[in-house]
Amino acid sequence: MTAQPDLLDSIEWLTVPDLVERLDLGVSAVRQLVKDREVVGLRRGENQSLQVPARFFDSGGVLKHLTGTITVLADGGMSDEDVIRWLFEPDETLREGSAIEDLHAGHKTEIRRRAAEAAW
Image (cartoon, rainbow, N blue to C red; front, side):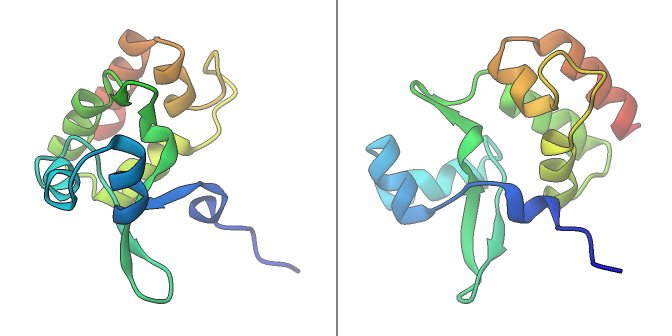
């Protein structure tokens, strides 16, 4: 019996230097995004570097409506890892197949409703 692949391993991750380059911000500004919980990240990899999912961003920067969704989930007691897993978990009942993809498609209301249900 083989182990199931971890959902976190299927996510494209960006390190702080990646985000500095992609967002054209300084290191302190990128770290502030995480500190202010506009995005969440995890310490991953050999060096346990802070990494943030690439899908948390679009061409305009932080994905619109992501921060509010993170807040709903975190206020309900979810850890940063739980929040990331919830956003990326495949869900056939969602129009785009996962909460993060629904947010990219602009389906904020449904995702916030489900986030509130999941968190509480």
